[in-house]
Image (tube, rainbow, N blue to C red):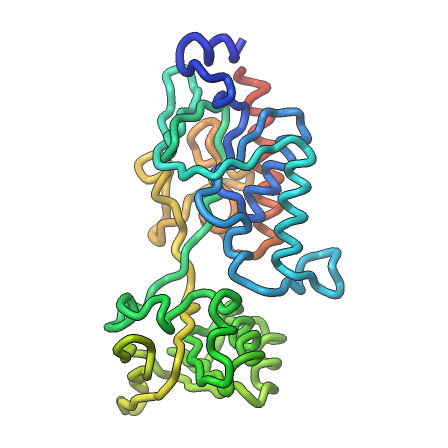
Length: 321
């Protein structure tokens, strides 16, 4: 019955009529695609950029269950993609820009290449790295300022590098960068870190890593590329300039929730508010992974979110269509 509605009213191309439309191909979106496809639902996963989400910016995963020796992030992403596709989910490279809810409950998603019509939507758009907001950051982005150690680390062999942040990403990426750099400075606004103890210990035991604490960066200097950074010690108020060739910024994430603004409820940080069923409060629309309000942002929790949302979406479709 739904195909008749789709074909006669909304869209002439049945290829763009689906049961579940998933926006985002990180671990949450790909897992949702796997479960939805396995349930026999026509499933499309939209991805505007690189498949894998935040995982595509890292090198190695050592804390995902079932991989006691760890696994290369690129291999893990490929396996997730293959698993979803094996169950019938199709990945399409388009950018979703708008969601409209039709009068009978169907959802229209407008992308940069057309329109899709779905019975249920799972938003798995992830999060983006926060910016420092200091002079020189924007101007020197891609010329020594980076948010991806895997992408840019090899360009700075035998150079001094600054890593800004105190969480897991800052520590794991700093450790990775020691493969190339002569010295890695971890610069953090406080004395205490948010990173897991195992990462902190590894960094402290790495002779290439030096800590600069209770300190903020106020400016990134350089003409054609990064040459130095200006630091301010928050305890002594001392200002000094530290020569370095690159600045890697890992100070947190901002949820990519713009597509749900005005549709679903967001918290004060912009994360989508859901219940334990990944429901946004809008029938047939779910949010999973880093875009939602969650206490832990890890690949394993993102995958869990995706599985739950797909099953809840299947129940919703069965009951309403």
